[in-house]
Image (cartoon, rainbow, N blue to C red; front, side):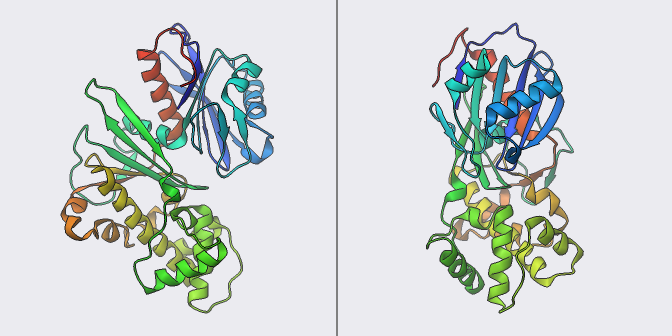
Length: 338
């Protein structure tokens, strides 16, 4: 996380944003009530950089740009920020100075996703198997969108929480059966010999899987967008699309189960991002939970850990606001880049 700020506890409003590889979502947060309003979504491709998008939001929503906190889909360490799946790059301090901001906080999008877990109300998640979560135990969060994001949330002895952003989506994907080895071979040829989890478990990953599975069955299919593949799978009109989504959920289950073991996440594993909620009707009949629990000598541990799909709107921005709330509560009057 990067904090380039002179934090003012008397301020009433801040602008928060959740910036992915495709869309940038902006909103205004009331720092007294922590209610969000003036929410607007901009396609990232329509703007040269973050500064232009912030100016467009300011002008269209008639809001002051004084305190800004954003979550962004890339590592957020140091002053130089470069998005992983989009061309935006910027200096934190340079952006603050160019816009005349009093404070500017930048955090990884899955640090924000982890913080959003504190804001979720009953009815904003759907449980996918497992036992009862243990309060204040570590949690994992992952999400498929333009890329594959990963984060964790841990509880500290003083009552605060610490989000742990990571780049687990770029870890190697491990095939587990003959068909998956064929998929791996197909994708390895396409991606210079290495296949990360993100190459399958994302919107573009679904497109890759569709081609790989068609090749496995010696079928010629046209390149399709993930949205179209998902729609065909939901209607059952395309057997390759259905198999693609089933494979997506099987591999997602294996990956999520690995995260659960890595940090012993008895607080639950949460699935965010734009892809899974749209395909939720197909999840229950998939191998997701079977593969999540297929952990050999530690299958009993995996079986006990619950999974949840986050269905809440604007969870990323709510996570940014939660992080800002904790920062304001504990921060001195001024802070520098950390």
